[in-house]
Image 1 (cartoon, helix red, strand yellow):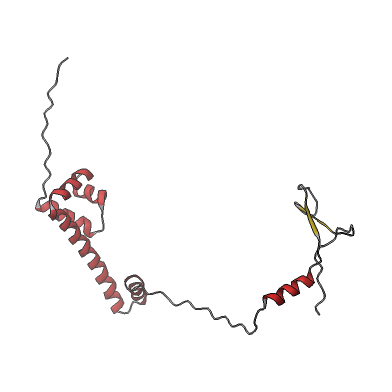
Image 2 (cartoon, rainbow, N blue to C red):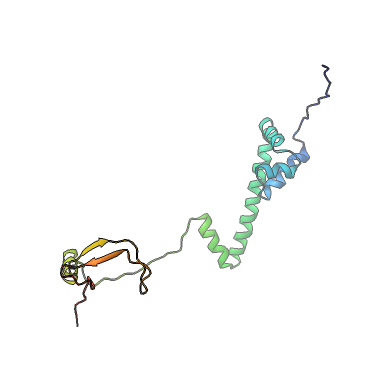
Length: 165
C-alpha cells in the first residue's frame, strides 16, 4: 500500500478593504447570511469564519444595514413631507404603531332576558322523540339521518309555528 502526498495549502481569507466594502454594499441592499457571503465572493463557511475572527466584518455589515435603512427611511419621510399621504400613512403604521380606528356602533334599546327567551322557545316547541336510523335515500331529501317520532304515530313536523299576527 502506498501513500500519496496531496499538497495542502490552507486558504487564508482576510478582511481586506475591498472585501469589507463589498460586505457593506451587499448589506446596504438588504442581503443577509448566505446570500451576502455569495455576493461578496465567499462561501458561507468562509464568511462565517471571517466574521468570527475579524470584528470589522460584523461592523461593515451592521453599517451597511443601517445606511440602507436610513436611505429608505429618508426617501419615505421626504415623500411624506412633500404631501404624499400614502407615504405618511405607512410611516405612522410601521414606525409609530398606529392603527386606523375601527369602530362599530351598536345601539340596543331592549334588554334581553334569558328566562323569558327560554319560556317563549318552550311554547313554540312540541316535545318529540328522536331516534337514529341508517341513512336512506329519498327523492325529496338527499339523506335523512334522523327520523322524528311522535307519540300519536303521526310522523309530521316536530316543530309547529304559532301564528303571531
